[in-house]
Amino acid sequence: EFACHYWGLGNPAWVNNMLEKATKLRSFDSYKLRVPYLKFASNELDNIRLHRAECLQHLSLWAPRLTTLDVQAAYDLDVIVFLKNHPLQQALPNTFRFHEELLVNAVNACLGPVARQAILSHERFRGVLE
Image 1 (spheres, rainbow, N blue to C red):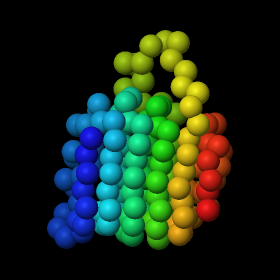
Image 2: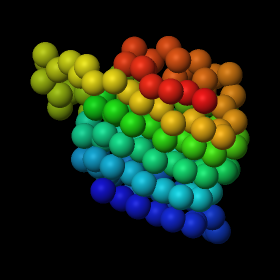
Image 3: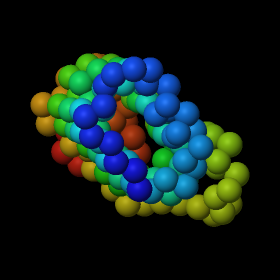
């Protein structure tokens, strides 16, 4: 698990450098994490909370077990990319299939058309998108 609240000064590269190494991350929780870009890649990641990620514009995800994506009050989220392939995929069993629903909380978020379409077209999306 990882949690970060109220960060926004300085170079944001540390977050993505950390995420690049966190290939077994299960949960990410943030509040007012002000970075323009986040890239997640973990076969274990179940929950991402990016509440008030006010500067976040681009979100890239390899998370085949993701069940909750919370982007509440992300005011500038233009792009979400759910990666179809990733090198970590090789660590999954050949018969791996994950069927749990993906719930998305986008209350008070300003999603761009690309981000909105990525969520709506995700094969496991069944949650409320507001």
